Image 1: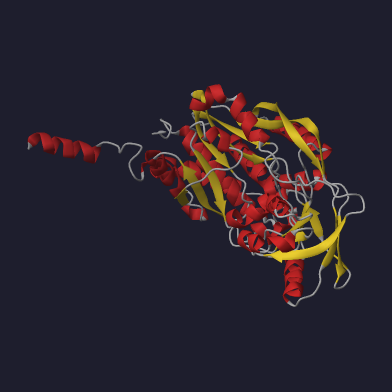
Image 2: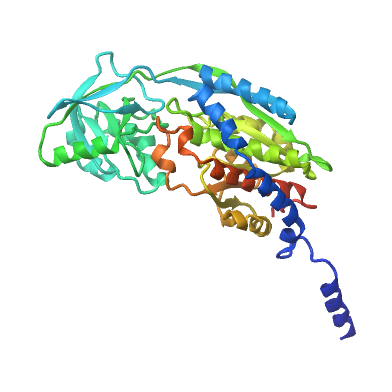
Length: 454
């Protein structure tokens, strides 16, 4: 009994272990509040993103505009005084859009706004003129396969979730070619449209002929569907100029805040520098790179140097290849065991809600405590399952990963369109994203022991 009383008294008077509920919030509250205040004190992140978007515009892999933007980022990181600013080489695919158009010829003439999908081949110079068959699903296409031969198949598939609907963009050309279609069109993958076509990556298969594939707007896809339902003959002339060139050299760019005690242990965070060849790539994903970069600058400005190193990376070629994430994994494989966390922002930089996390149960409990520090800015929701395309390769090597979760109600309105421009973003919401990234990265990097992998 005396022994049990001694244990009870010790439990009451000794400090709680770090993993105990509330201990992290208690220890890091003051630092977190300073970080949040600094992140919201100005519009520096918005201003930097505006320069990236306005000066360089769209940044498709292999393009001169991307390489100029990477040069600028490296110069700016050095001017900021970040540590170990450098570029690591990546060979990237090069797809060129070329001239393209779509015209409705029957039942009435009309030019259709369109975008060739990334990776599409070109039509003959005169284009492809053919009747259109509108289908709503894979099963609908299979049921009407006899009508698809010699036609342009249009997939009019309403948006449900991105993960479900984007399958038609990725594999639509394969499915249409297998039933004899000469080309394919896609209702743009979006829940909302103002005659804005959306591009994005598609793929071919060796088991099917390669046919041109392009996206048209929601308005036009539904109009052609109504025409078909009325029994109208629909004829479209499609011209695409897409072609693929040999791989070209590019770079992942990075800088860091070197840890004061364990500099070889790393929290890595960032987004991707490339975009599609439309709009400015402001939301997808210039904003993701800039908020991680600015988070590091906030810590630097406050003199908050954590135990471990925090590295910001602008990964290249996320949109049409994923080569940047693979190259980072390969270049840093020997130190994968010392990467304690990878954080990605690639869902827009709207108001943050928190993070999705992939890792052990004990690590998840710790991350939830860190998330509690963001309750004041509404970013304290920590959910199971998170990561991103660029950190996926190192996550598969065992590194815990997380993705910034934002209010994405408008994200797919502008995704992969000419409308992905800086004016769609709010300076304060970007600042909130900076705050969330900075607090999460700093606290995890400063913990006496890293979140356990098991």
